[in-house]
Structures are given as structure tokens and as C-alpha cells.
Image (tube, rainbow, N blue to C red; front, side, top):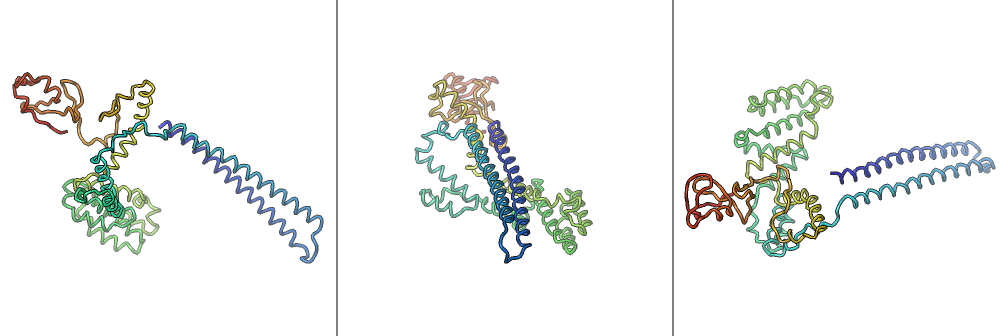
Length: 392
């Protein structure tokens, strides 16, 4: 954040200088135009067939000199602006790292399996974004088996989400109607919010749309009275202000663009939860997590290079430090073995004993005494092979 603040400070200086130069330029150009207009008036007042007098020549020369001087000042100010703009680039170079190869794993995509996995999540991402032609081309050129790409309903959801942003509620209302029972079971507010937007959209037609709006409310709001009685009363209150316009009433917030953005996001969230798919594509999650972790990894790599201990990181699937990726990127719980006080990993997963207690595999092996394992938390004895691998 400190780096962003440093760059933002330089950007603000450029913006302020742009504004100052723009204001000054407008004044100078206005003065030049005024000067030329006066000059033209003084010349046209005389006889058009008469010759230019010496006095008029002096006036012309004086006007040209003033114009050149003002334009020269504009050019100088514009030239000085270049230095201020260049400082932004220097601030970016000074506060951000351009070379990220220090944190990369050169062996990550050397195996065919990893390359195919990368192509797969890229193709899935393109399908999610509605870019079917790009995804099809990637599958064809990479040789990825088409059956490996499991079709998701996300493409339809994305199109509906985009339609909401463009003011088209018909696809979203149709989808919400199809899944109305499931949405009610989840106590979702989506269907009501869509009908609220549709109601306000009708009211944008003014007084002549009042009858249509009332009919729409009677048809669609009855099922929501118990949960959204107060909200419906507010919507009915908007009818009073049709004469002066909703934008001039206390209810103008109902027509704000933020209402559409919020409803679109609620649709995407509830629809993904209902259909059991992730809101974000795996590629988006990976990129966002990587961007969050990158500053800490760069700092760590610099420290390790200065102490000449970079070898301990190479080839490991674990990071030497813990990085907080925020709650939205936590998809499962993490098990910490109560015996060895270590977090579980793929090589050391959690194991459930017959008695129900859970320890890590390394702890299981250390506590085993031949074919007998005594639980460290209860007196039950059991066979180590009876322990079950569990997933968090």
C-alpha cells in the first residue's frame, strides 16, 4: 500500500498541474482571441479600399508580438509538464518490481500433465466468460480432449449477469421464476430485488406508466408481502412523486446505478450457490491469490538471496512463510496435528482413528508400536492400518 500511495502522490501532482495549465491556457487563448477580435474590428472600421496606415501596422506588429509571447509561455508550460509526467514512471520503477522471475518455478510447466491442466483451466475460464470461440480454438490447438472440459451452466449465468448490467431484466426474471422454490428455501432476496428493479424501470416512464406499475406490483409483489412488507410500502410511496419525477424525490436512491450492480452481484452469488458451482473460475482464483502473495514472496526472496539460502525454497511445494489470502480464498479448514503441532500436508495428511480422534500420519507412525496403536487421548487400542485418511 505504501508503494501505491507513493505513486498516487506523483499522479495527483500531474493531475493538479494539468488542471492549472488548462485553466491558464484557457485564459491565455481567451486573451488572444479577444485581442484579435479587437484588431479585426479596428481594421474593418476604415474604408476597405484605403491602404493600411503606419499606425495600423504598429498595432498589427504589437498584436503579433503579444500573441507570440503568450504562445511561447504556453509551449514552455507544456514542456515543463513532461518532467512531471516522467516522475510518475520513475515512481513506479522505484516502488514496484518489474521482474518477477525470482519467485517463479521454472519446473512448474515442464511436465505434459501440468501443461494440460493449465490449458484446461484456461478453456474453462473462456467458457465462463462467454468466449466460446476462443475456448474451442484453445482446445483444438492444444490437443486437449474435449471430454475433459465438463460443461458448466456458468456461461448462461454470465450472459444473464451481463444482461442485468445493460438494463435487460427479462433473462434474470425468467431464471428466478424457474428456481423460485429453491431461492425461497435459501431465504434469498434475489427474486424480490429483480422485481423491484423492474417496477422502478416501469416508473421511469413517468405519470403515464402509473397504471402499468400498479398492475405489475399487484401481480408480482403479493408473494413477498410477508418478508418485504416495508420495502413494498416504500415502492408504493414512489407513486406520489411521479409528477415531479423520482429523481427529485426522497426515493431517488432506488434509481441509482448501484442498485443494478448490487442486484447483478446477488444474482451471480445466489445462482452459483444454488447450482453448486464456484462464483469465480479457478484461473481467476489462482491469479488473484498470486497477486496477493507476490509482494510477500518478493520480499522473502530478496532476504533469502542476501543470506545466500535460496536453495531451501527450490523444488518445495510449501512456502516458507504463511500468507493471508483473505477469507474469500479459504475453501477448506486446515488441520494441525495436536501431537506434533504441525499443519497437515499432502505428504502428511490427517488420519482418523477408530475412536474418532484425529492425528497426522507422521504422528501415527511414531506412536505405532508394531501392530498396536494406543490412542494418545483415550485408552482404546487399535491397529494402525485401521486409521482412515480424512479430507478437510
